[in-house]
Length: 123
Image 1 (cartoon, rainbow, N blue to C red):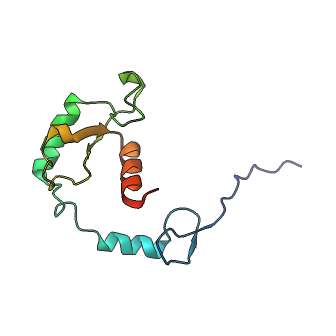
Image 2 (cartoon, rainbow, N blue to C red):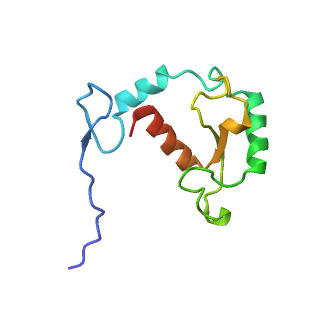
Image 3 (cartoon, rainbow, N blue to C red):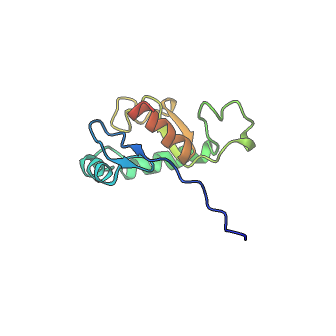
């Protein structure tokens, strides 16, 4: 008798939010995720406004491939396409070097998200 292949189930894990005992299949539990989103300032108030959108779009035109530490050793055509501009110092457009291209690096969405998570949560 043939049965359809069922994907393996992931083990539940404790929510990574300090003090939260809830189990979740991946990432934060829905309660902590909602709370984290509501506590975060808007992108505009963090400096990601029209000026930033123009500056980052111009930078990406000149730097079309990911410049993260993992991609830099690869030939350009083997790198991910860059879709976002990262502030190397982590301070964003409102930081003292927010509009200094020497403080920017072009990154793919997944590599930028990974770097941000590492910088923010130490994961």
